[in-house]
Image (cartoon, rainbow, N blue to C red; front, side, top):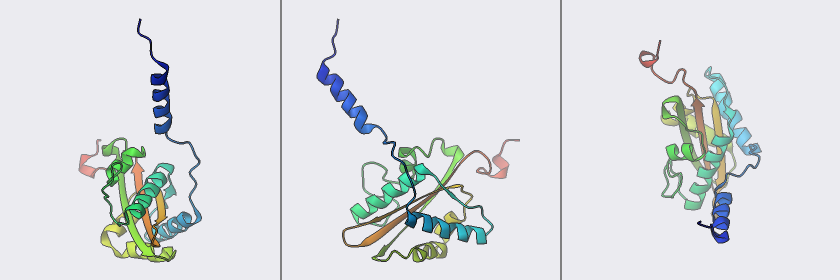
Length: 175
């Protein structure tokens, strides 16, 4: 009869505890709320439905903003081990489950020293690619803001939609 040693059991339990997702409450900050409010004002003026915060997207956006600040690099893709690009972050934070039924996008920006969020949203509105994401057929949003040691502030806005309807071109939809 094989006996499992106590140190092995403790190691497994410790590893499981370290890898477990924390169950802390995810609440948008006042700054994150202000940015989403500005985005939703822009969406409303373009006859788009407002976005609502999604805890998984908030986690993903905060993770990416913090990594950009740690790396001191503004980018959609960083040279890090976990979550180096948007699709992997969507999987890591459990937002993406079936690519055929999920749409998502990301806007990133940075500015030195100022917490003037209107400049960030205005910059995204002026960029064709970012504007497309701001006005996309999304329902969910997550925003992350982080500051590096030199005072540069990094922003990440994630938008997404999980469902089957209206994601495929009309030709490909089942009847």
